[in-house]
Length: 175
Image (tube, rainbow, N blue to C red; front, side, top):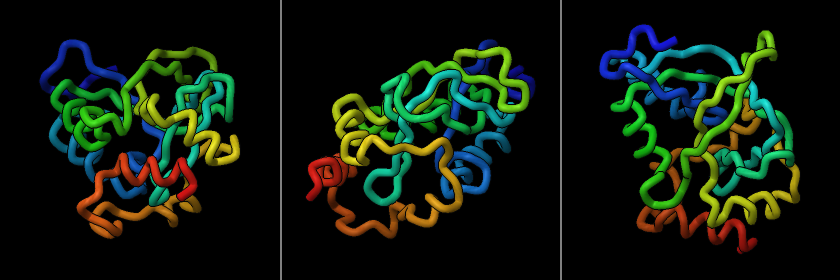
């Protein structure tokens, strides 16, 4: 499953559901990992259980760790090296509490029979449930081109000096 990765005996399985997918803004990082043998695309996958997938401030997609709510979420599964994982963690802001990387069971979207345990980047628990509430408990089954039109690149966001977590707090409070 991890053919092509250069620095690991045991790769990390990462389920992507938003801007890291093919055709979306942050896929350039995923593609760079692939180009440097730090990631391999395994194909389209879907979560085994339902989860909320919502868009927050700047159209940023968030998977919420509330299994049983929302929909089964469609995305892509990658096998990633430890070095590649560090780059993904940096992008997703795991060290500042923006996202947290947690287990998720996923199934190949083509056969939907065998599940594998991967990891996904969930909205941090400090705001995830409030983000679900703020979106009226209405979620998506897939982040698509339609939602991507509302995504604002970091360089184009207002208040460049403000931290993303402050923008998240404003969003969930309805300000």
